[in-house]
Image 1 (tube, rainbow, N blue to C red):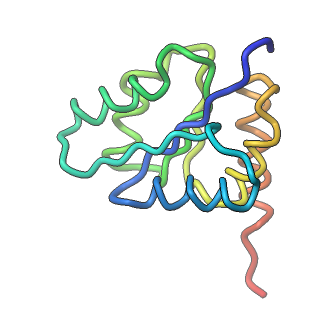
Image 2 (image 1 turned 45 degrees about the vertical axis):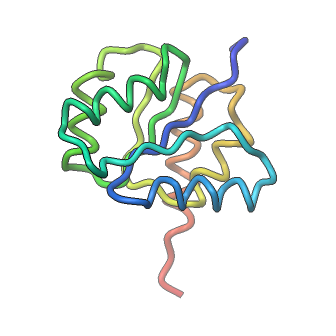
Length: 124
């Protein structure tokens, strides 16, 4: 890919901003991730926020839950976009992996991030 991927983190409340800030602190990289919250908006406004964050760029959109308003807003407007992939169940490990692999295709970056996120879930 010639254009680095954009990561958009869509969550309930302040979670997206906290995850983005933490990923930036850990990785030392800023500007790779954009936080979108559903706070204070209806579904249509949330859809508009997500579209504005993607802004026509190749992207991976990370959503907090595999159901609910955030995922519905993302899928309604982006499901048919070839250069956008969606990953649910966002966690910090997948975001840190993503920021270091933004030169991959959206599908490759989404798969890699999902695998990193799944691998990080343990019961010690």
